[in-house]
Length: 397
Image 1 (cartoon, rainbow, N blue to C red):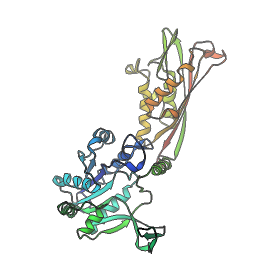
Image 2: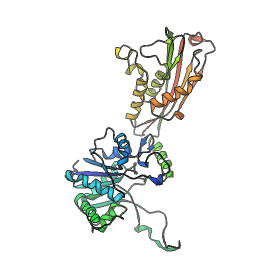
Image 3: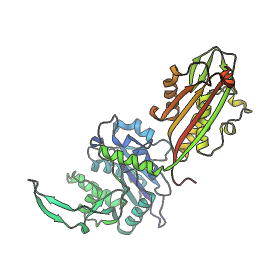
């Protein structure tokens, strides 16, 4: 993207670290999920926005190619490059990869800061255009003291002259690239951020307003804070209900909750007649105020004849994701005299959790009879009642 003044803007997203301080995990911290989405994907989503940056160059560890492909799916990004042993080396690799594209302004951002806003990025670009080198900073509110090697206080520093520095840091591209190249030539590999390299190379670095919510995920407790922030962003909590019934017909099994259960009859319906998944689908669509299963998959349409109902539930889940939301909880009650649902309860929970992409602890399946009353009591069919709790962003209408 070219800015209003004609600059070509690019971003380097640093995601090559191993995240060892973030606690034990099977994957580096940038590939861990908060609010159902990995840190890296949240970050990439911001910089893949062509109205902000025309180019986004990610730097990753060679071992994380497959994880990166999942995180970047659907985004228009430059192919990733491999980082080095230090953050400085990784940034340098990203800058060199941008050379053929000749950007005017480059932003350098840590993948572990997933809550940076569009407004912050816009301020960074504007500050770099004005000064050539700019970093976001927050006023320090705690009293800061320097200590000596013995652990004694050396002096108390004046807070009004201190800033806690964040990313994205923004620079004129060519001077920052040359500063990195010079650091390599002179054997300097000890810089902790790009502002330090710029200062060392003689650039004057300005400070613009950062954001308190632009936290860096470093320690295990940061993930808890990030999860809480995500829940705050998804504060529009909605509940929907769904009801479905299907009659018995000829057959030797029923499908309920995505599980085949042997029985002396089958359920009849236009699709596979999975009464449980149909009720859940309607519950989710109800929470979204987005019609019902019949509106999206009309029985009159032959393409849905015999269709597997997991397709319907997946469709509803995707409608939630498309609006930036997530499933908080799914609750399903099956009403029938036979077959016995209890022995299959956990298999149903696992099936529903897999389709919905949520933890099994967020899925409840219950079963009851109607005490031989009504059509279910007479063994003529099965009924299902479902409730879905969905979280959407507050920006939703």
